[in-house]
Length: 98
Image (cartoon, rainbow, N blue to C red; front, side, top):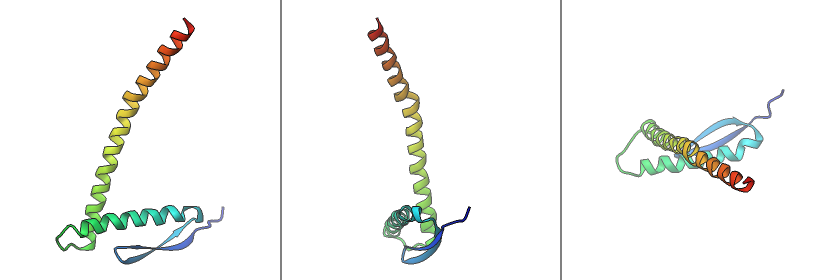
């Protein structure tokens, strides 16, 4: 299968980065780069002068923390909310049958 990846350039903290990207993934990559740029600018603007690498690591740690919290919430939802929905649906089925 032949790749249809084409180069795309995105700007993060006023630096240009080139990636090879499939046509159907270009908008998602642009959105992700804009999101990352915004988060990195927020950390950079918080005060102290920091090297780009430190800003990137702090941003990555913040995003990893958010992701882990969301995964924990999703696990809670699956374990608790979904099981309660199934239990209520079973009760409703029993009531309709009886």
